[in-house]
Image 1 (cartoon, rainbow, N blue to C red):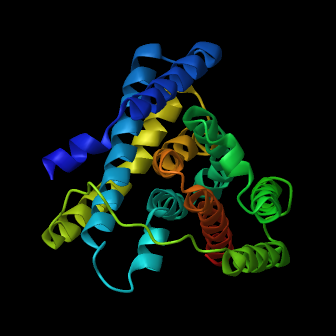
Image 2: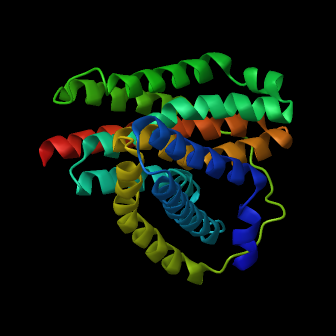
Length: 277
C-alpha cells in the first residue's frame, strides 16, 4: 500500500500543487488577504484533495479484478467531483457544489490537448472520432457555462442537459481491452479503510476550503471552478498521458469524454437536489 501511494505521486502532481499555492497567494496579494495563512490554506486544500483522490484510486484498484465492475470503476474516477457536490449541498452552497464538476468540463479538454502535446501524440488524438469528440466536449462545456447564465429554477434546462449527456454516453465507442501491466496488487481489505478516509476527507473539505477562501479572499465558487476542478481533473490528465504514451488514443479520449459527461450529470443532479431541498 505504501509503495502504491508513493508511486501515485509524480512530478506532474507537484506542478498542480505549486499552481494551487500560486493561486491562493496571488488572490491574497490582489485582495489584501493574509499571505502566510493563504499558503497554509493552500496546503490544506492540496492535502484534503490528495486524500480524496488517493482514497478513490485505492478503492478502484481493490475492485479491478471483480467481474462486471468495469462501468462502476469508471464512474468512481469522478468520485472527487462527487464529493465536492455532496459537501456543497450539505452546506447549502450550490455555487460551490456545482463549480468543481462544471469547471472540470472546461479543464478536461485543455488537459487532453496538453497531454497530447507533451507525449507527442497530438495527431493521434485528433484522429480519434473527431466529430463525436469535439461535439461532445463543446456541448458538455456549453451546458456547464449555461449554469451561470440560466435561471437555476428552470428544470427543463437540466433535464435537456442530462438527456443530451446520456445520448453522448451511449454513443461512445469502447476501446479495445488492454492487458494490465506493472500494477501493484492491493488487497480488497483496503476498500473500507479507503472509504472511511474518503468520508473523513469529504467532511474536512468545507472547513478547509472556507479557511483558504477567508484568508485569500477568493470566493469559494471560484476556488471550486478553478482550483478544485484542476486538482480533480489531474488523475484523468495523468492516466490520459499514460494511455497516449502506449498509443491508445481511443481510451485516452474516452477517458476525458466520459469524465465530462459524468461531470454534467453530477452538476445537474446537484442543482435538482438543491432546488428540491
